[in-house]
Structures are given as structure tokens and as C-alpha cells.
Image (cartoon, rainbow, N blue to C red; front, top):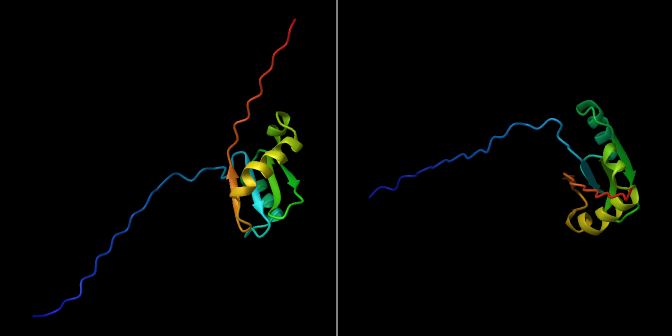
Length: 112
């Protein structure tokens, strides 16, 4: 009776097109994120034509928010910061950078 070694190898890959730009609406950076806000802003300037606004946060877990400037025409910085702190912060590790795609709906009416 001989014992033989068997080796089985399987490689699985999910292939998708790389999205340019790599950020659509907003990034939330944790305090210990592997890339800092200054480096991320420089990278965005090279990769994206759309201007992004830097919002510095005084928080124990979040260091910065980078948001597409045009979104701030529909929501105020204060409202956005409140949303991030109440809804996103609980999901953010201090060493993470979270990418957010925002769907902001504004409903208007005017009596003439």
C-alpha cells in the first residue's frame, strides 16, 4: 500500500472594469486610515476632473470627508456631517476609507 500526495489548486477571479474615476460622490476617512487626506486630495486632482470639497471633522473616529462640490448645492455641510456621524460612523473602522455613492433628493414646490 503506497501513500501518494495529492495537490489540488483552484483559482477563482471576479473581473470587472476598473471604474474611472475611482470615487463617485464621497469618501469618509478614518483617523488611522492608510492614506491621509492630503495624499487622497492630490490623487483625486490627478484622477478626477470634478472638484471635491474637503471637510475636516473633529471626531474620535472620523478624520475627514471628501465630497463632490456639486452635492453641497443640494445639502449643507452641516446636514452632511450630521448624516455621516449618525449613519456612517458606526460602520467605519478607524483604519478604513469608506466610499459612498449618495442619492440626494430635493423636493420643491412653489405656489404661484
